[in-house]
Image (cartoon, rainbow, N blue to C red; front, side, top):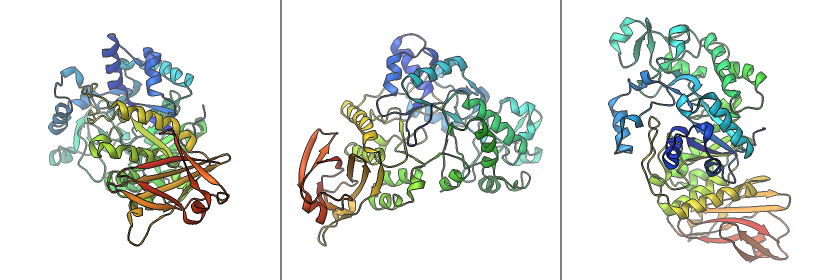
Length: 486
């Protein structure tokens, strides 16, 4: 199955989802025996790919090292926490084998088949920076890790671990303290690069797309900044070009997604990734800063097509906990109608407020918001018709005594036989302006604008629209998603 150029990805927390299904059906449910209606629920119209987050074997040894603050977060999210709710982090991988609790490799294969029948891709994780302290490589291949000595362990026990006769660094990035439950791989090691390519190839045999966690950490630039003096000198070639050259020879069609921060998106595109997280857009939308969003969308279109846009994921707070309820549709319309890929998180459509820590296999019971759930499903099914053809950011002007137009964001999509216009008021202020529409041929007729989300159409004088722009007046957090009709 060839991945679409701008896929819509639905992230599902595998452990929590299977626990919910087990409880609903009153029988154990694994990936191999998920009922069809449950697959239908996570592959609603408009979804191109399902990311089964956290299918690999989790580490009991890593879980034993988790700090008190992290454990405290378990009960904050789940006040009735039980011992069997805590199963360890999916990013503390003991082995890249599907956890037996989830149905093992055969169960995953059945899940992939169920998705393929629905025309939906399967996305899985890979963590290039670190592994669990009981990963087989720790005992069998110590040369793959950043290693220290007894003095390091004595001076900084929070940064080092004694394992299998070796002192091994705990995993980290350059800006935060070490993660207590994982050990650091040496990105400069040629042997690790070879092992990474082989591991990725094995994962690719089981899925259609791979999301690489914190993909910027193994790059020469970031790894040298993090571990200067602790490893050999940076190799002549960077990590990902070496790893992916071998990988692409065997799996040219696997979609590669980079979790990326620190303005590393362009670099990771150049090094072989198809898509990178768009954290800048996330921050600017959640900050409700229309000017910053507009500036962000002036970036080169070839670059924007390769971004993965999101409003929440398993690492970020629930959008319903960050924005007023009435602002959520405006943010979602913005996300859903931009060029590039989009990521939607399980529970986001229902306006869930609590993001369960990834260590847990159960989430708190929260009532869904039925109206917002239905609205999200309709948006998702409508967006593919909108996002066709050529995208263009549009100017919105106002008047000297009324600059509320600065709150309005607008863009168009133009394809043969289809024209769409989007206007969003990303503010709590009623806002008015005139949108400079990009189309010719409107001047001699009345022009219809149909709103597929509201099932209504309104008409405007074509001459006025062509010469002065389309007048819009939107309430706080209002939006227009319009198909232009003759």
